Image (cartoon, rainbow, N blue to C red; front, side):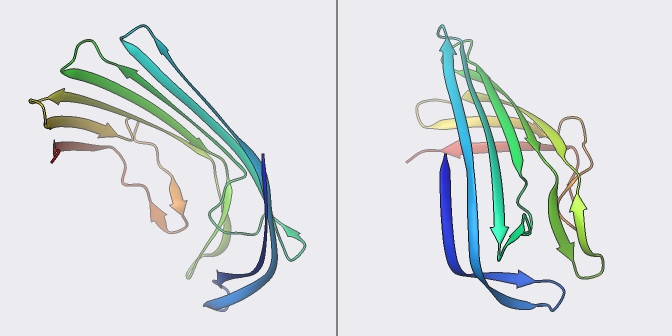
Length: 159
């Protein structure tokens, strides 16, 4: 559990298109994380949180901050060279704003990703990933739609 009290927090007001001073911001909530292993092949991690913000006596008016969210990661490592990762993320509805659209509430969404990686020796790793596996249509910030289904290839070198 946590509780933070801020005085004189700087925020952006889209209605006036300028920085504003929020005299009192109270933020409280909790976060829970669980992780574990199942033998040498499987690892997992679960995370969930709930947050409430009160700004100058008004509930949940800080932009782009959902009241609740959750995520899960699952890893399968069949041998020392290969790893498969699956992740799921849920983010609840949240207030947002944009210049042409004004204030709005963005709906909740769920996103799923998958990645496979292969070791290419002691210090290199090749990764293939698919982000937003089910091509979920969502916005994290008003006016900026998600990129949709994406494939990535990466090469990591450790020094």
